[in-house]
Amino acid sequence: MINKRKILVFLSVLGPGIITANVDNDAGGIATYSVAGAHFGYSLLWTLIPITIALVVVQEMVARMGVVTGKTLADLIRENYGVRLTFFLMLSLLVADMGNTVAEFAGWAAAMEIFGVSKYLAVPIGAFVVWLLVVKGTYRFVERIFLIACTVYFTYAVSAYLVHPPWGEILLDTVKPSFDFKASYLVMLIGVVGTTIAPWMQFYLQSAVVEKNIKVENYQASRMDVIVGCFMTDIVAFFIIVACAATMFVHGIRITDAKDAAVALAPLAGKHASILFAIGLANASLFAASILPLATAYYVCEGMGWESGVDKNFKTAPQFMWLYTGIIVIGALIILIPNAPLIPIMLISQVVNGVMLPPVLIFMLFLINNKDIMGEHTNSKTFDIIAWATVVIMIILTLALVVTSFL
Image 1: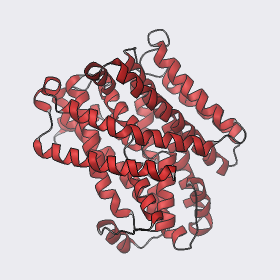
Image 2: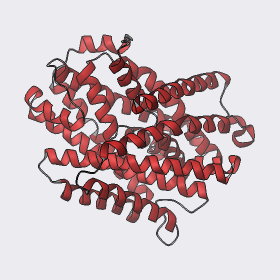
Image 3: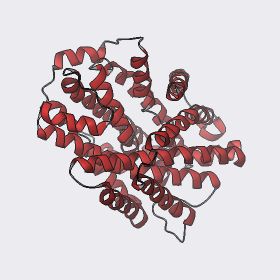
């Protein structure tokens, strides 16, 4: 028998987990998976299994902290580790997210150029739409729009189907780990893993859970929301890799970003596959261009003790609204500057993300195992072992990503 009450509870809390995980497949993530498939075929598909486990472990912890404490991650860090440390943490994350927002508008501009729309028209319109959505919308309305945006990611599944890949070979490579010690393979491996867990995700998810006011008695449904989101994002990554591997890799075509992948698909897999891939890129870029400034505004204001929330306005939460507005305006303007140094900007943001991820993960683990904060909802020993192992592996890979970024 289907438990109707459980389904209704799940639908009522649905949103934060699915939205946060799917935004992880932003313009940079799609570019990474596209290059992975185009340059290395199916050989990196196996990484998506441990990546999904790691993502579930980390996201579940912040969602649980939000439900149990009713406080955001930035709030908890400020209360337990002081304002000074919180200020420098927030400042570093602000710098990283400014660069990430620029990358999202770059992805939006690139996708629109495929459809013949100039970036000088597409970027201002896109920036205005995402600004208007959050500034004038309610939390419930904004969440529904974001959930609709999540469904558009399945255009990548259709693109992968249209290229008619060898599913038997693909399934084997998905469950059979393979290693190559060439520098290019290792850099790509680190990139695929490193694009999965970003510092902003932890702050945004916990803030969204708190703003949605999810209660402890409904946590199992919220936990399922997180798990479904983590699986969705990596299933999408799977299809992006497959689509590019089955076309570009077998023909020896090299690409540098997601736009190249969308364009290259047309002669190899047909115009429909190419268009669907480009639609996915446009949706992901604009979606992330909404979420990243929102996440930044959340954790900076919460870390500083200022009012925040989508349901607020310029009078009740001026710092939150002006910060959100400022990040969008600056990110869009940088894209419109002729010959803007986009690659250095994206590189710096990636490095700062990498540097900030380890301390954020460690703060999370100390907080979630503090009985004064979490009561009976701290990690079990088994879960703690898995969580710490995940953190250590992420730290090693992230530090390696930082090093390779400099090199």
